[in-house]
Amino acid sequence: MTYQYWDEAVETMPREELCSLQVKRLKEIATAALRTSFYRNRLSDAGIRSADDIKSLDDLRRFPFTTKYDLRDAFPFGFLSVPQEEIIRLHASSGTTGAPTTIYLNAADLDRWSTFVARCIYGTGCTKADVFQNMITYGLFTGGLGFQSGAEKVGMMTIPSGPGNVGRQFRLMRDFGTTIVHATPSFLLHVQSKMEEEGFTRKDIKLKRAFAGAEPYSEDTRKRIEALLQIDVFNSYGISEMNGPGVAFECQCKNGLHIWEDGYIVEIVNPETLEPVPDGELGELVLTCLCRESSPILRYRTRDLTSFYTEPCECGRTHRRLHRFAGRTDDMLIINGVNLFPSQIEEVIMGIPEVGNNYLIVVEKEGLLDRLTVKTEVGPAIFMDDSRPLNALKERIRKKLQALITINPRVELHERGALPVQEGKAKRVQDSRPKNL
Ligand code: ADP
Ligand code: ZN
Image (cartoon, rainbow, N blue to C red; front, side, top):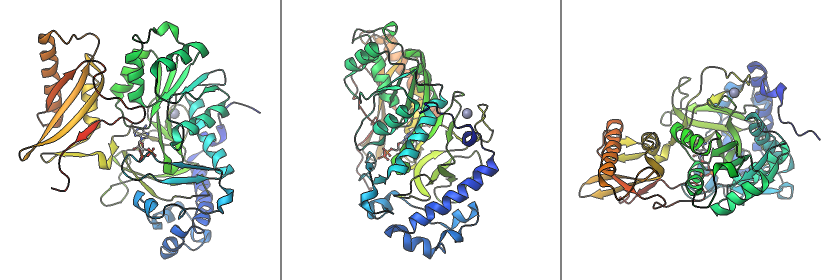
């Protein structure tokens, strides 16, 4: 068994060949989809009754979109294309925006998935000599087991620590010489801010890299984690409907996330018109999973906002790259008529070095108006009992936010460790406004 994970032929495949491979796989996956109760009628209504009706990638545009609501409606088995006894694994989404959705994998699906994750891991420079600590939730959530099997494929010693218990995380890192961790960016920031308190210094651990994903974060947040922990941080994008992690990942160039186009057909559309946006423009990511036959999902509207890089990557991989995600279409806040993404606020505050590692956005109704409050913790250089620098910092944050978002927010500064921390995906927004007004 070789433990390397660089598939040169596929990863640097000329684009034309890659497109032909996609057509071949699309035919296979459409054949599987036609066996599901969910797609059977929908595809034949769209004129796709067999693989022979697919001649080129343009034919994909005839396929209907699939949404999270469809998955929920067809729960539990509407997307299953094989007898249930062939399935060896079930996973579910985190349920961030409603009832969780499930996917099913047979042995071949599982093997393909872990291969994609292994490619991602290897592409950041990791080898079998690395020690990998997976500080993310195991169980139904795909991040735990998904990374576990990918890391095993690379041949790294893997420590399935799961999240939580920061002291234990540091002890594991020290005792076993962890070189790579995987976590949400918010949990990484939390871990870093507890390092001293737990009695550790940077010298006690051998950490080199972190994979950070499962939630949006800004470039400044990446830089902050990199500077504080003295490591390289790579952005990892996954979504359970497309298996989970391993969909798109940064290579060593750290400049956009390569999406594995032998496993996924990528479209970026205008969320209102559903027409493709011009290359390089922001839109909703739509994915067709070519690598899971037992519960196929076609033209899935991820609700995640991103854009394509238009230039090829210096690493030589031909699979296209996506820009860092701006958030989800349904994350958008409308505050007194102004549209705002939480990621815009993060971009401002994480770029201010005196600001600590955690923040919270609170939106409330005050009379007829919406009121935005941005709560941040302060960094170690700021003392809560000295009001002059505190007020100056508050004012600086407020001005920077107002310049960017045109709304005048209230800013509150809190002591380190005062704001809530989640072990999984961070909950950055508390919106207490009455709904449907
Ligand atoms: P849920 O939609 O319930 O959170 P998942 O657990 O499948 O379900 O999480 C997938 C979602 O997590 C993506 O659709 C995206 O919104 C978010 N996500 C995952 N990785 C990233 C990332 N690197 N950057 C931004 N958002 C991400
Ligand atoms: Zn690259």
